Length: 339
Picture 1 (cartoon, one colour):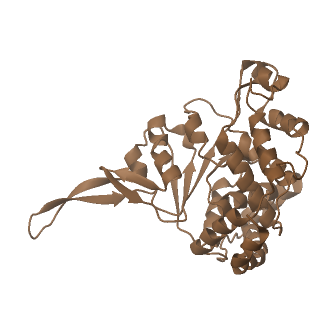
Picture 2 (cartoon, rainbow, N blue to C red):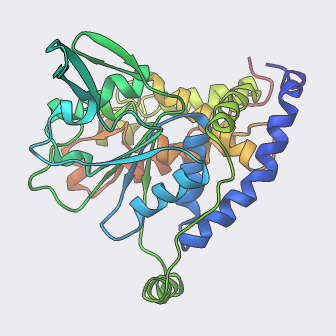
Picture 3 (cartoon, helix red, strand yellow):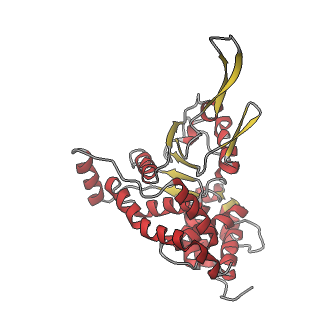
């Protein structure tokens, strides 16, 4: 796509540029630190994707998501995933409703919490796969089917799911097919000393978590379209594809460390999300061109849940992030102009 084709959305671009700093200011009224996490989350939202947030309890994952929903003036609902949660608890159910005057009975649909704009799926790995799968259709098709009837979800629709990485008992790991629906897997770490001191003093005093709206749901839909209009040169797109293909064991690239440590690499969605994430990152930094460094910057979030390590990697204490770092080091950027 030519650069001139983005001129038609110049007003949307200007709104994004002006509103980005306002949005960050509102977030930081409530959230301390976590700059990289916030940037990654904004990239996902501006591309219309879904994300996993992985971190131990107490790191303000829920507060961050609720704050962003308020800033975007979007409806927000939270589901606490538990072992006894049923699919109908998410999607909704049909009940028999009787008219008291006529005695006539008919089925009436009671919408579940999935009918919202931002859905927080809290501790998603604590519910069985049957219930986890209730989100699959919603995440991919933006619709749910209940009682044989398809019901559309209001746009924009985001699933932001959290999981605790340190507890294994009583959890159900997400199937690879569902993991692949998440654009990013964002890891949230501990704050540094000064940041944690600020959190401790702020939240034990009179704490106001109210924020002002900056964007609307329609703005987010406009931004999603704008992201897709950002041009990507052929050599950057090729680099994203080569990076993903290099993550696959016994592929044409044949990287020894991948063959040793990886049992399954990233699929085609990895390439797509690398490019979408790189486009959004460029826009958020005020650029209308995408570089290989943008692809490298989003690679950990895009690939860490798409690379399945084997027993040898576990024995060698090698993580998916280690493998991604090696991939970024060894996969050379194609020369500009290579078609």
